[in-house]
Length: 342
Image (tube, rainbow, N blue to C red):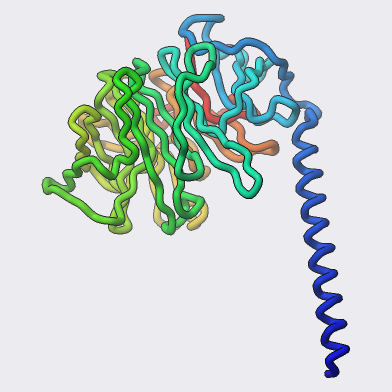
């Protein structure tokens, strides 16, 4: 092959790559623009005031609105009695969100020229920013304690999915009353199987709080296994309770956890089923949801949990009884990260 022919091939290849890249940019831009247009049949969404105060406006849900249109990704509210009815959007955007006792935690993306950055924002009852901290990775979980004193969040700092094993997380804990900030639960003293434990591969995620405003439960991963741990925020300790528990969520009365569990024989990309765990007997019960749920459920009340599954326009919320009976029911289309207030 002559030098001239080689140069011609290189020029043609470069031109082809340029065209492909340009088409990809145009397609991505078109897709982003499409998401800014309201989809037919979607829930009506309008701008208005959104509050995290208990009892204000009756029982309601505050959540990340996933419906396509100008208010996509904003915190929105809807009546708990009509969750698929009209939504009021706040103008505050969050990737992950949770709230309790008039306090919210909002994990946000900060758009950058090369790549996005992320931050955790504490919100008051009117969604005004109280404080903010930079995040070390991609937001994935957020929780506020029932009394509003503690907030926790988890980010991915390596890898991008809980489904595989090649990932690393960082879970932080913030005392909103004293300002004490623990950047990583990995700094807590670990008691595993009755012995003090320390290992470089330790990861934590999926914090859920008890009503005493100091006890929490979470997932600890180490040595290729996951463990349910009970933690003490004041003493900065965690103790393992049992294996194969991920993203626990504590019931309002503090007696049960609902969590996702890896079930042998399922696809490596969709390995989980939801289970309930009685903390007194440590007896577990499978819930009546056959699909793989990659979420930390939220308790709607003392009998029912809510979780997300992929939908046509992002994520939809489903509900199922926490005792293993019944069947899943879609609660809301195009919604994520709910908090039940009032």
